Amino acid sequence: MQSKKGPFILLSVLGLILVFVVGVRYGQRVESTNKALSAILTSTPYAPSPTINPLQFATYNSKGCGAEFLYPSSIGVIKQSTTESRLTGKDGVAIALSCAKIPSFRSFFEDKNVATKEVSFQKQSQKALVKTTNGQTYLLLIVRNPFSGSQIFLAVEEKLYPLLQSSLIFKQPAAQE
Image 1 (cartoon, rainbow, N blue to C red):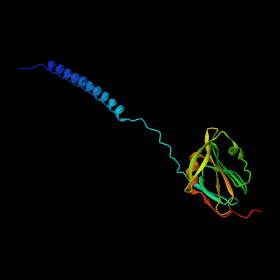
Image 2: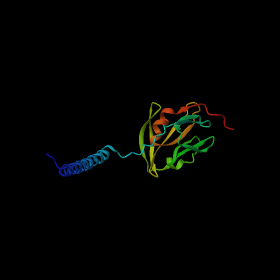
Image 3: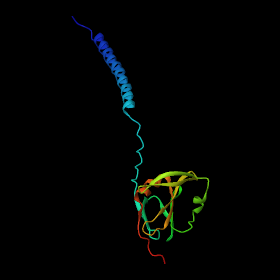
């Protein structure tokens, strides 16, 4: 018996078409799964956090007043004489020091509308004036150099007071000419 080749060819072609259609559909499904997975696995890149420079300190030495203390190096010395110094940061004056009989910032000390605060200074309790100017709170106090007996007027930002209080060292003042 002879069989005809026509039906076998037709069935083979239909089988190939079926395999092609099934392969295309499977490929579409795999592609959609890959897109979903890549969306889940791809994280948005975060901007690197800025590195914070370590806080560095410098030593200020007022030879005329006989005082030495640490201050943040971000603060600069803008006015310095034998009897008076001002150290400023980006927000304004951070520390003012004077051993003159009449300091240039005496108006702070003469203001009657200031509060007082009990502060510890070199193991002693002392009253300090509290003055707020341009959003900055300052502690104003008068300390005595034990070597010379001279008064030193200090105006310091409240946030810098602990550093000043712990690092202030008195010395014999340099001879004034």
